[in-house]
Length: 415
Image (cartoon, rainbow, N blue to C red; front, side, top):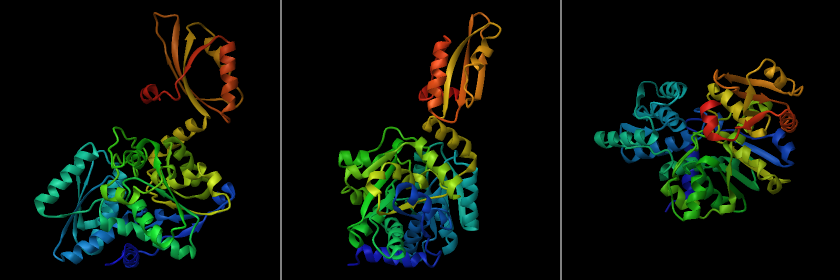
């Protein structure tokens, strides 16, 4: 019987028929920051800018080996999986039908069509992914096609394990630790299973977005569970329920080795990697790097590999990323201010601002029948400590205000 390690090596050899090994690069900036030897496995530099091409290639190759007449492959995806499947469909010259939610950004739709060319048909169905997935599976059954799961498939898991095989070969030694992003679990399950066999001394840490921590919830329950609510900001890893097959591999993970990182903090990491290193990462691709902030005491003096799983970042999201980063770091706040409706009231407020306090937003909602008007104000400053001074001056001046920066319900409507 062929071992999983052998299957992963076969998948790695298969990858070379389509693209070279993605780089394993030592990052001097992060190594200096954390006093460790930190390497990045750059899956964001694959032909489709994510690791998803690996699972798609391995699964499709095996399907065609079992049934050379198979000619229709179906998947449902709003992003990286769709692009990987499209690229591989064109490679094998087979037809692919890719279902995407109607709400999918145009950039991702265009890239999927570009990668697939004439071999791929994109169908826009449903406002939510569950609707899209259901329609894709119904269509696949109707036409007798082969459904390509994004993660819960043994052939896909083997394909993703090729990332670990490349790391061990490129580093030429076992890393002390590997930090893996987790969504549905295909990448983490494949890599974890390979490393347990080939490099059992390597410590494995798993990272999820705080708003989609399905692995942690499933480990706590002892079985895959579906989250009631998912924050979709980290769209490449925002999965409501980890896969059944992937959980079988990951259920032996130590719960204290599973980290949940805040979405807003990930934004700071995206900006840091872009501005300092010139590395473009999507939110899911930045998960493992962001987790280093929580692992500082664990990694000092050690060799660490972080898998940067994807770089399909839509730059139209950059203002949102900057906004969330500023709010998390405490240099931007929003508050509601009550101003008396009299001449000079606004001037009185402006005089309490410090030299580094900048008004980023100002909306005055005057009510003619009242003595006071409500003002929505956004302030950017150079240091979080400046807000202590500002609020102290507001209190001394008798201003009535409410800090709504962390109030998600209000912020959703007014920020």
